[in-house]
Structures are given as C-alpha cells and as structure tokens.
Image (cartoon, rainbow, N blue to C red):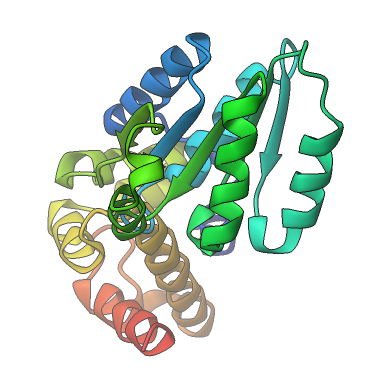
Length: 245
C-alpha cells in the first residue's frame, strides 16, 4: 500500500536539513561559500532565482560551522533586523564573526548601508542570500561595487537533477514503492511545470501526494500505482497555479 500521507510530508516546503539533497549545483555553491568564508572576506552574496536552494545552503553552512565559529543564522531579517544591529554593536573586534542573512531582499537600502559599514569596520563576514534582481540593483550603487567580494550564483536544477532530488527524498524516507511509481513521463511533466525550482517542486509534489491520498482512500482500485497517470500531476499543477495566482 502506497503511503501518500508520508510522501506528502517529505515535500512539505520547510528548510529542514534532514531533507537536504546534495545536488551538484547546490553543493558547488556551498563549497565556494565555505572557501570564501575561510578567506574571511567582508561581504558575500549568494544569489539565484526563488526556489533555487539558497536557504538550504545557508542553513547547511551554518550547521557545518556552528561548533567551531561564532556564526549567526538569520532566517527573516525583516523581523530580526533590530536584533542583528544590536548584536553587531556589542561584538568584540578581536573575535571573528560570521552572519548568514537569508531573504536579504527584505532589507531596506539604509539597513544594507549600515551592515556594509559594520563589515568595513569589524572583524566579520556578512553573507547575504538574495534574488538575482536585487543584487543587480545593489551593484549599481558606487559604495557597494568595490566592497562585494564574492557573488555566488545558485543555478536551478536541470531535468536529471530534479528527478534525483525527488527520488532521493522518497528513498531517504523509505518510500520505495512511491519512488518506483514515478516514471520518465511523470518527471518530464514535473520539470516542465516547475522549471527546476526546488521550492516549486516541493510544493507541486506536496499537492500531488495530497490528491493521490484523497483518491486512493476513496477508491484505491482506480489509482494505478504501477503506472501513475499524468492527470494527477496536471490536477496538482492547476491547484498550484491557483495558489500562486
């Protein structure tokens, strides 16, 4: 019996390292970021389209460094900016500090400028994860052009990586029967709809298994788990599109 309820939870759209899948594009950016941090650069930007995996990279790097470094991970700078500035004011210049700021596109221009000043003065590195369009706007400002040491881009998953992402998540959850249910034509359609966005993939797969759970519980004989019909993916996508309209 296919456990669609459990499969659905595997794709809940949360930043959970237990669900981390080391795709090659994401791992390359993570490695480049760790190398840049080893050099103690002042300001580093991790950019990419929404859903490309920036949040998971920052959370993974934080988990990797937290035992040996003074490192702070800020998930929502809009809500936590006063805390960030308060911490910066109290830091000792003798100790090296790392700030990993996710969703940096939420920061105002004045806040970016304040953080730039702290980075110039202090023994700290600030890593900003932001959308591609925001980094382009920032680079147009003269006082940022010479101070951004690294811009690391996260590329979206290709067709093969997306299939690996979905399969790995299901297999890690011991959902072998569900993983085997998805065929090439299913992955092709999923990739067409999500365009390689990991966030969109999580959301679409969550809706897909929610729909399959409903129909399977209602009439299991009508859900062919050996050869999944694309109609269920199309239904999930319609729901997904309506949610994002």
